Length: 391
Image (cartoon, rainbow, N blue to C red; front, side, top):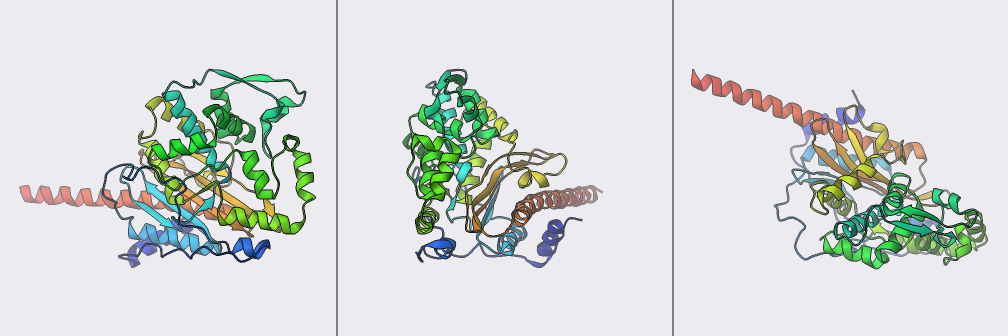
């Protein structure tokens, strides 16, 4: 028996009701360095306010108390700020811990760029088959497999559809940045998010702009060559890097709330954001994602599927920033859960991060299994009662 499933059943028996997670601490600045960055609390802000009315008019259902308790337990047990949100797509309830705090998304923000591209496809402003020419000016920073095709400084053609594949399946920063350019810039992405009534989501700019500022630099074309960027970053005084990172963590330009992410993913799954064809295409790419094999994906049970996107930020002073995995977990019976697990900054090693994310996936499976068994028992009892009433 898995540990999370066992704990979930214990809580289900012992806790008839539990309160939602308490208020978030106020944003405060405590100077630079690890201490200042570590204690930069998340803000309760929505980077994109969206429409004044909710995305879908429906009463908010409370999450099952025992499952809410398990989510809170997993977050607290991690020992550092870890935001978790799980939304049942059909029923609409959300269980969360630190769900309304803002966390840096890192590459999770590629989802909202892809959403904007697919909206442009639906509007016939772009097509998946149209080609663009990429040249040396399209280099970004960090992981960008497409940059290997630019080593000879020779432009090449690539379709919008293939750029999306590189961005969502491989998390290619050069592909993502070019897609932002094709839709008209970060402002267009922000307006698309807002027009759909989504809250608590941001992109903040291209990967090369966000990442260089986070390091304490301003983008230069030479930084598209990774070793040049890393050399420039290494040459910075430590206090400059400390302050840049503290600024980023205090108010991340690519920030999002776990609640905002699962709300958006659930709406995407329900077909409320894009056409059916565009929805299926985007979810299909998310289902092929090759990153984060030891995160949520490692705990996906037989018969389940996962369509997801990871985010991984920089390391500095023995800590890692923006360690995330978000996606849609679908059970064998088709029941789907939108999941977001986000870590702002952590000194814990990869094994602890993986345990947290895998624990959330296993808790979802345990809840699905136990709730299905409870429903089956209820149906059997009703059938027996009906039979007895007819005698």
